[in-house]
Amino acid sequence: MSGKLSDDALDTLFRNARTQNAWTDQPVSDDELRAIYDLMKWAPTSANMSPARFVIVKSKEAKEKLLPALTEGNKAKTLAAPATVVIGYDVEFYEHLPKLFPHDLTAKTWFNWSAEWAEAHAFRNGSLQGAYFMIAARALGLDCGPMSGFDMGKVEEAFFPEKNVKVNFLCNIGHGDPKGLFDRSPRFDFDEVAKIV
Amino acid sequence: MSGKLSDDALDTLFRNARTQNAWTDQPVSDDELRAIYDLMKWAPTSANMSPARFVIVKSKEAKEKLLPALTEGNKAKTLAAPATVVIGYDVEFYEHLPKLFPHDLTAKTWFNWSAEWAEAHAFRNGSLQGAYFMIAARALGLDCGPMSGFDMGKVEEAFFPEKNVKVNFLCNIGHGDPKGLFDRSPRFDFDEVAKIV
Image (cartoon, rainbow over all chains, first blue to last red; front, side, top):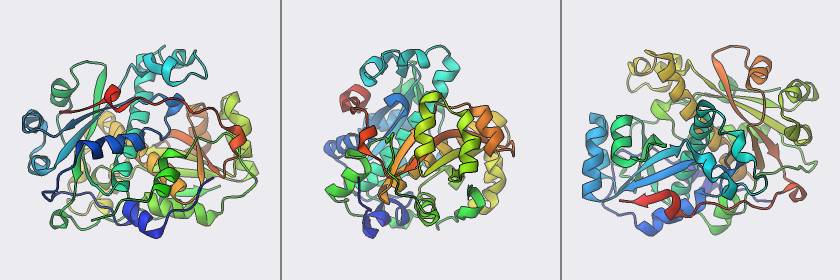
């Protein structure tokens, strides 16, 4: 169905891409942020449940609401980033399945019988969508700086007051300044974490 | 740092890629499976924790071990797929942080103080890595068929007997036969699930 990407594209997505800690002054437009979403929305979730919810923090006022929730090490870089995406997941995603999964109108009942079961699915699939968001941003020539050092309760209070949405992680978006890079950390070799049986 | 991918590449990764339910006879080589890992391993996880663990089921014997754990609707397509990846996550990932996160040798203590806290991080980051695996497979010209319809206890007993690894989801890998495709389900518009503040 599909061809292999070029080596340049594989470098952009995976091999040369780095988690950025410093940012150039180049802004990220609302159109670019919408373009990221319009790519990542197509990637798969279980029963197309699409539980991820996004609040993209760009204004000075919204940054000031976010900052007190961050660990010290995450404050300066988040203030400097052109945009910070707050990625959450809707634990009541199943309410939307009659629209999102028209193949089977009983799909809602696969999940809504247990809050714990529904939340596990929302967390798994919302995390998949968080990854898709970052890869889509890279595919559009942007850099990412994901973070999980923050106070979840404070972020939810500030950005997801609707109670059915829990925060997953944050991700700065922009054009990275390589002066903020750490040395690259080692990865496991295939045979340390995978086997073919 | 990086350029925008071509429209063809964006189609391959996101816009034209589909969850496949039928497979051609074209095999997937062990080298291709290792190449997927050698791309996805570079994508970010919190403190580089890399909690995902993979058992790739290719042989007839291993497929027979997997099949009884699957829901009826997932059996025939899994039997037909050239490879089925069992994606798990190590809830004791923190034991490897002195190797994986050499910047700060105290990183292990950020996670090992609570089994519940460690497991949430393993599940989040292991799910990110599951998404990276699927996107890397597509980037190499392969198709994916992710599934969460299976008995988690049975899969763990068969493929992760080491107890510290929990199963996350399964993904068939191969070359999709479009005859198995469902009609594409609708996605949320940006303004239904995202806002810029």
